[in-house]
Image 1: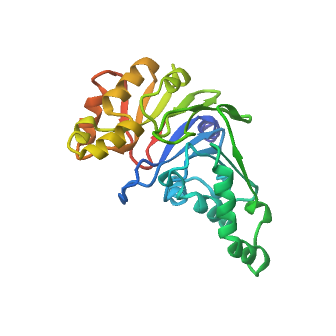
Image 2: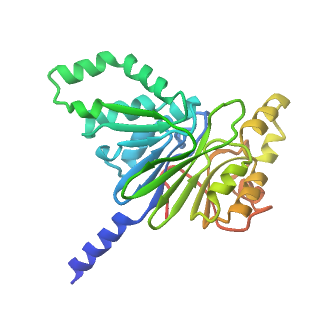
Image 3: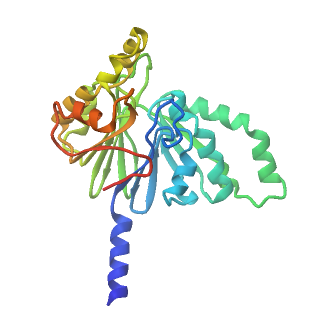
Length: 286
């Protein structure tokens, strides 16, 4: 009886859609926070959003298997979101992935991926044609430049891309993941976004970037102009969440600028009183 219950619980956990924060950081090299990367796990499949530095090792630390790292969705092409792309392409190919890798993102992603493949062509040749056992399919990368709308669908999830405003970037996206048991929305990097509000309304989990408004007030005018044009302040995240009304609001890509997590959350709570989580690497949210 106990064994049967264990099998039932294990099957239920495998189907449970949840989020693993693989990287909650920003361009600053904080050892405890890898670059932006999130895993959405549903039906035993992993869907990675962004490839910040450290993405593969954090995935391994989170218990994801290399053969699960077969799909990635990139929000935009800033280096802190893509510097881990070569790692995501090549490390799993050497250590367990056995099918082609699919990558989806804004225009320019396909060209970036082609340049990565070209830069590592000697490595690929040696691994495939030297003495090392290898899986040729693992080195096949299908990169797709996509436009807003439905961009992916399988038995576990439907993925919709929507445009957000991220300073001078012509193309920057957030993503909506629709699973059987949950809807999860990621902001990517953005300012206050009406398109995000519409895409996220009523979602179970909203994962949103944030900077401290109080912390920014201590920065120089050039940095104040930059962050105001590219990112979302704590109070504005609260305004977004008050309209979306998510089951849980998760803060990532944090720029606290000297403020504590509790102080950043207080800025959000000026407008939103629902559950707020200040994310840390390897947090699991259900």
